[in-house]
Image (cartoon, rainbow, N blue to C red; front, side, top):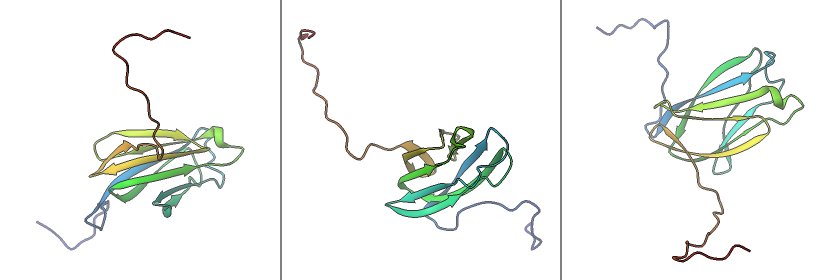
Length: 134
């Protein structure tokens, strides 16, 4: 039966109906935190979320994002080689990166996908007959 007493482990969730919960695992191989370097997640150019690993070798940030295309930017220091991160969705899929990177990704109903580039390139369709190698 439900009680009015608070739980010792709060249930994490998003308050907006159109948002889904994701995890960003922050890692530092030297174990001394990110040294002031942080991450920024933007949607449509607007800053949505930011954070850092203040100390230690690992932390997990819980993030609520709506469906759409987003960008994550991490790093920009002499310690970039120590810094890495993994973005996890509700289905266990993930993508990872290191500091000194900006990456584009897409979220849809709790899942994360790679996003198409802003300016896709066009390639010619293969011809039915082989062409000469220059």
